[in-house]
Length: 425
Image 1: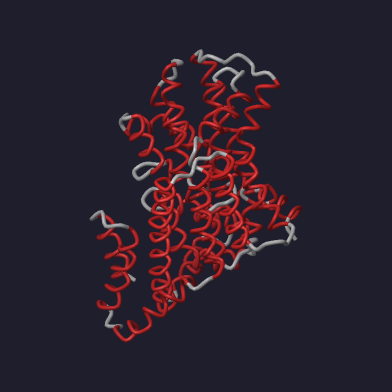
Image 2: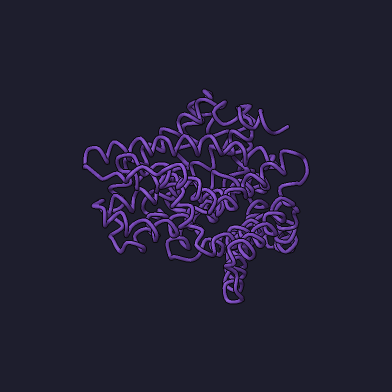
């Protein structure tokens, strides 16, 4: 394992993309340990790892999100959120928080959420007197809610790797997402009161209704997904296909926003993102072969239980390890590397796999707003052209609030599980 870890960190520090880091680490391990006989199993592992019906949901949900993103979707969602919360002190900052929550139900991507909302909101927030670094940090941290709200690519991948019900994972992410939105809203109101940020004139019921009508087809997408799965009408993968057809009809017929050029861009973006994820999955299954050879999951469980047999101490250590990994790796890479060991730990501690899955995904998402990688912070730095260091300083208190939510969902499993137990059989 020393060779595997050494090659992994060396290639990672060289700036090589994570998919190729995984592949080079695996092949380096086979060469260094004179286990070349296992190379014959590598192609079979790579293809069998991707030969899963549930994984078809990933490119389909990405395509549905991209289709819904054309034709001014972001502006419609922001206008609706603004009509609801703009009347409060610092209303535009609340729009950023709840706009992120709403947009997450369409895109499922934190980076896409940050880029879309940052482009729309930061100029107006600057015009109203908001500190630019604070605005960028608020949108960047708020965007981590996106992969908690269905459809979530991270939840699909965790479910595929662990054999956990994806429909239960989808529903389980909703309450933590709402909890994070509420606590960020409270912080935004407190900051607005201290700094005297403005509030907008209250929207009338008619204005709220018109704003809702303009984005209602978009907001129905997650309802269709959850309703279809909950009713037993479709599987998660079939729900993704239904979402694509629905998104095509809404974007093309309702919003009349599809053109050949836009369709080409949508399909190209979907192909590029999906190919990256599938390459990661392929190399992940090569690594899983190495993990089984080295008995890594059993070694991790033994190591943690040697330190302490207390369930809460072990969960604290797991959270700390995942948070550190989140500072350097993306969500897909962390899930691929850690899920086998985490499932062994979960079995040892008798944890519900859905509860464990939400904890793992939430940890990964906090990494999107944590330096030195902090993808969403880098996205906002690019949007606002502000230094990443300045944005990170304003993000730290909000990351602290996200850690409080992580602590709550870790300590109280029913926060995560009561909604799946209620809605999903």
